[in-house]
Image (cartoon, rainbow, N blue to C red):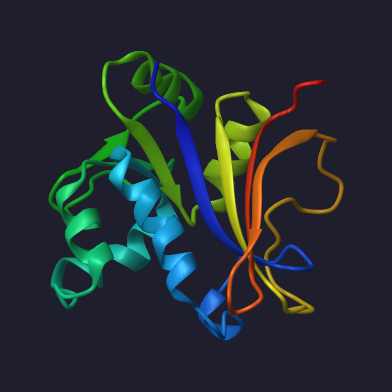
Length: 182
């Protein structure tokens, strides 16, 4: 069974939107954590907003950027209720239920399925019990405003810390999985 692993940049106050505005010190250890995830994945899930932002950038991005080759050469599954088609090479539009399609993808043979950005997809899969791991790169900054990973008023969900370490820039690299009483 494949795992679904979401990787997100986040602030101390839970903001995940526009990391280029507050993610000041991206260090080698943070890059290594993301690269290690990519090496375990053979598919990526994207929400509509992330897909539309990325489809105009990554296909022509500098090939020297490690993520360029990964994202352009990995099958992408796009969750959208408003798009009729997707044109970025290797992209597949999810028609119907995101939860059903992810359950199907998880049951297939293969490596991990990654999620980058796409907070609505992450939330949906977290609450559906289909998110196996959540990798947060938490910057030591308070954004004050912006979209949060889990909005106020959301249902309580417990997680288990699987790994936590401090990067040289002061960011925390935190890996969570489903809650398990130990």
